[in-house]
Length: 213
Image (cartoon, rainbow, N blue to C red):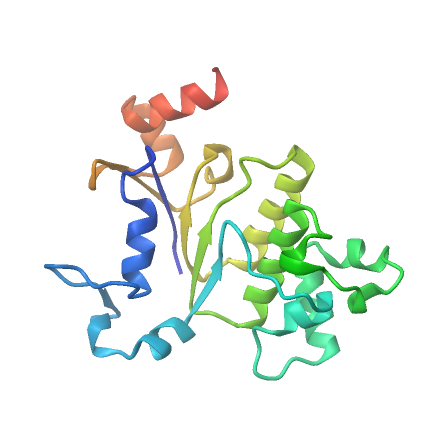
């Protein structure tokens, strides 16, 4: 039920950790366990069925918005799709479209903005009812309003769910229970936002660079 953010320089190992967790490849030594069970004892499909992923670039089909949201669920009726869209701060935008939930998103979601695609990915993740959420935070290239809507939606749906966030913009993770600072493949610092700023280490340096310039 804890939110854990991974921060660090590019190449420090943030994305590698999530790939190991999902068994895109297995570690050469050591092990990863969930509730004491090594994940190598689970089939990949079973393991991944527990996880809801919001990637940097969501995969969208050239189908309707409703189809793209409902794709995550075995059975998704319109009521559930609308509820998920509301939780993801996407419903109001959808209702401004002439065809509403039947609007086609285009190849790879070309008709949607970056922020809209991210919120659609959050709505899809909500419908999958995951035990673990992996959020590859990709708001650094978005405008402030899109980032606010995504962050509001994310913290609302991730409450009391085990959550792993790969963070690029540190302002988005100040509410995380724990922040793990990676450096050269290892853990350099661990703490919450306030604790890490007080340490005046690597995290404090990143924070100063992003807030002061």
